[in-house]
Length: 195
Image 1 (cartoon, helix red, strand yellow):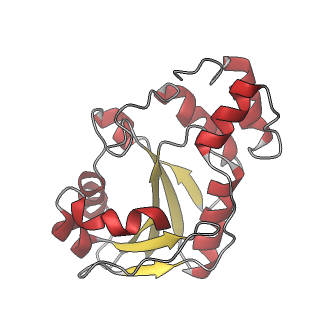
Image 2 (cartoon, one colour):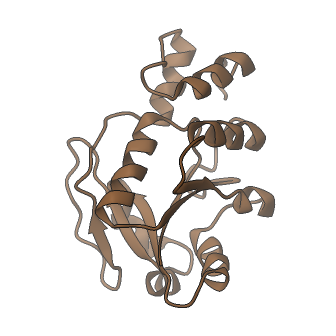
């Protein structure tokens, strides 16, 4: 079995996340892809994301009808800072023997991999799938890390850009699934500068 793992804040989930997920499913011939919303990202310690419940709800709405994609809220249930190695160890213990785990990572994080918690153990447990960024420069994988770059569709959209657009009163309906846009509007998310 080939299992894709896509961690992040997903604050909010957007069309770029979904396009990347579909590209990974197709290009890597994954059997399944699991979205893993972080309780708190070690890379964004000062960020105050939308509540965990709302982020999970938006993900579930965005993935409605997807048969090979799902949401796993284990990092939120675990609480605290979400470290990839902890999640990968848990999943590796749960899946069938011979399952290959593929962790999706933004191209801008590749150079930082050696600084991740228990990097050497993580490098043994998972293959990294590098998501290209528009205008980005591909990084060589650090020694010991297995990385495959997605050819997919690099789309210049980010969750922080979407939050900024909401604060400015700009439309987001073309950047997020309709159900996610409804939650953002209905919950009044990202209106104040500290969200």
